[in-house]
Length: 504
Ligand code: ADP
Image (cartoon, rainbow, N blue to C red; front, side, top):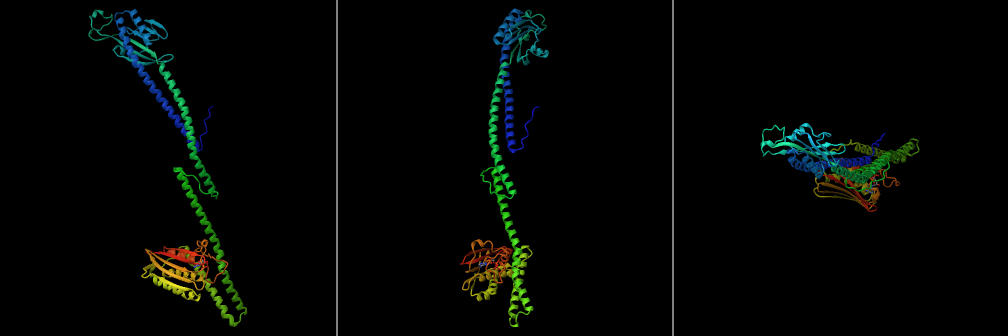
C-alpha cells in the first residue's frame, strides 16, 4: 500500500512543502492550459486548411458527378487523396458513398459500404443544404479531423441535364448534387503536445529543484533565528541569562529579536531590582535590632546598677541623663521608623499650604545653628531676594532641611563650612546644603538614600545617626513632586540639591 509522507511538524518542513506544492501546482496548470491552447490552435489551423482543400475537391469532382461519370469521379478523387494526403469520400446526390480512398492504407472502395460515412443523419442533412461541416472523429488509433463540403451545381443550362431522381423544380437555385469529405489523422498535434509535455515536465523538474533549494535556504534563514530565540527563552525560563541574541536584521524577525532582547533586558533589570530589595528587606530586621540593641542595653544596664545600689548618690544624675539620652534616641528611632513605614505604605499625607521659602530656610537654619556653633562650624545662609511663595508642607520641608543640615554639620570637621542656599530657576526651587566635610565615595552615592545605610559602619555612630534620615528626606521630597541629587568628593565636601516644582 502506498504510504503517504508524514505531515511535517516543523515550520521549516511546512514552508518547504508549501513552496514545492505551489511550484508543482503552477506547472500542472500551465501544462494543462498550454496543451489546451496548442491543441486548439493546431486544430483550427488544420481545419481551415482542410476546409479549403475540401472545397477544391468538391469543385473538382463536381463536373464528373454531374455527368454521372463514376470512373471520372474515382480518378479525380484518388488523385486528390494522394495530393492532399487525406482520406477522401465522395457522396452522390442520394447521399450514399460513391467512392472512398485512403492513401495511407492504399485501399479504395468503389461505391463501398465501409465502416459508415462517419457522419450522422442530421449532419448529412446540414451538408446537403449547402453548408460546410467539420468535426473530430475518433479513429481506431488517432483522432481524426473530418471536413465535409457540398458539391454545388449552379444551374445555368436547360433542365434536361439534371441528374435523374432530382425533383427540384426551381432550376435557378444552386443545387447540391453530392458531397466530398476529407479526413486526416491529427497526428502532428499529439506529437507536438507530447513534446510540450516533455518540456513542461523537464522544466518542472528543474523548477522544483530550484524551488527546493530556494525554499530550503529561505526556510533556514527563517527558522534558525526562531530556534535561537526559543533556546534563549528556555534558558531564560531556567534562570540563565545568556545575554542578548546577536543578530541584526531589518525584517519582522529582526523586530522580534529586538523585542525579545528588550524583554530580556527588562526582566534582568527587574530581577536585579528584586534581588536588591530582597537584600534590603532582609537587612531591615537585622538593622532595626542592631540599632535598638545598644541604647536598650545601656538603659537596662544603668537602671539595674542603680536599683542594685551600685551607684553613688552624687553620680546618679549623670547616669540618669545617659538613660534619658538613650531613651530619646530610641524614641527618635521609633519615630523615624514609623514615619518611613507611613511614607512607604502611602499613608502619610502632606498638609500643604502657601509658605514663605525665606521663613522656612531661616527656621531650619536657626534650628541647627546652636549645634553647628558648638562643633565649631561656620554656618551661612544664602537666600535669593524675592523668593516666591511655595505651596507645600511647612513641617515636612523643615524636617528635610534640618536633616540635611544636621548631616552636613555631623560629617564636617571643626572649622569647616556649611551653607544653605535657596534659589529659583525657571519654574523650580533649588535648595542646596553644601558642606566642606569628609565627602562620600562615588560607589556609595547610590546607596546613601537607602534606609539604614551608613557609609562608615565601623566607626560607630553618635547617638543621633540611624541611617534612616536620607531615606525619609528622599520620600518627603518626592511627595512634593521633587527630586534630590547629591554631588560629593572625598575630603572636599558634599552638596545635597533638592529640586521642587513651583506648580506643585
Ligand atoms: P545617618 O542618620 O546615619 O546620618 P542618613 O540617612 O542621614 O543617616 O545618612 C546616611 C549616610 O550617608 C550616613 O551614614 C553618612 O555616612 C552619609 N552622609 C550623609 N550626609 C553626609 C554628608 N553631608 N557628608 C558625608 N556623608 C554623609
